[in-house]
Length: 436
Image (cartoon, rainbow, N blue to C red; front, top):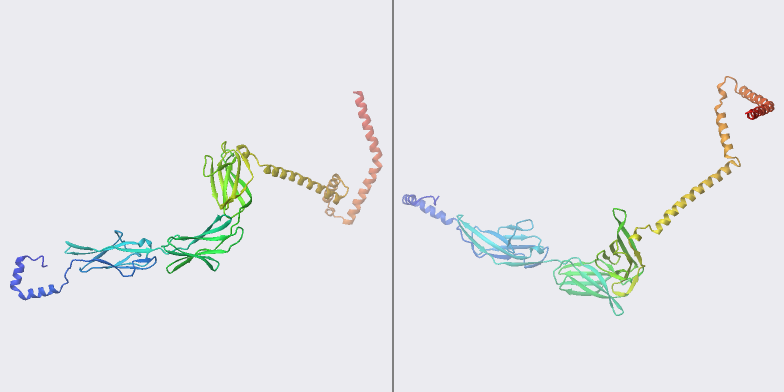
């Protein structure tokens, strides 16, 4: 309202109302004054500027003078976005659990504005905050070293995270056998070794400040290479059912630290060639991927040795492979097929023979024709049912028996006449043929 009143009106009021002027001046003196901001400074309220991840970071932006001040935070010249991980209230920036991503240079900018026309800013100096990664659970592994006639296990303890220095310790069971402070996140220890003998269970310990972590337990045992070394292969078939590719596998019967070599016609195959690709998967096996063609034809074998001693190589049998060999039926398959066919024929013959013996034992010397005739007569006799008549059953049976006896007697008496009549018919037929 004061800004909107013109000079004439103010002159009139001052001349007419001196008591009002005094009262207005008194009220204005009690209103807060707008003071330009100056002297911004970052204060680390949580303590040290170096800390491990997971700790709380509490920053405050102090100013020497200024009113109605607003604050903006920057990390490595990038404005800090507010989130549950980054909380800001008034002059405070709070990070409840810091990570390595929160490391960097922090700066605050204090600002205030008057009448929406005049602004004041004060930039603090940068403060370096370093967040150290906590050491992670170490991995433990070992390789074998041959020194003259002695063997050693080189045990490696390595953590993927951690801020040096880190204290590493090596245990065999409950006994600590080595320790060292490393400026890296790994350490190596040298342990005497006897081939083929179990040397104990080993574990790594990594310590960083108040944090201590342990690796898994591993057995320390090295078995030298031993035979036999065998090769077997699997084939890839094309559209015309012809073999177009092979996968050759080389495996040794024994060994924990092995290295493999493939040979074609005594020429070493390594890496990748025009028709092959060697894939080592120690210590279990090595794979030779190859296409079938003219350039791949030849005699193949592999050699397996200890990775720490090349003089211990064991060689596999040699295998000749070309397009014709891999596309022919294996001898074993042919033998199995014909063997199964022969077995089926023998099985059928044995079953038939057993059936014949069983029938002879059950029915004696009767022929199959007699058995069939008996079966037919039994079927006809079964069709006769004397109960269909009103006569007594015993009378019916007696009558039937008498009829059969009469018929039988008549048949015996008439047999010479039947024979004579048959001869007459034959003589007449012979005379007719002679006339013709």
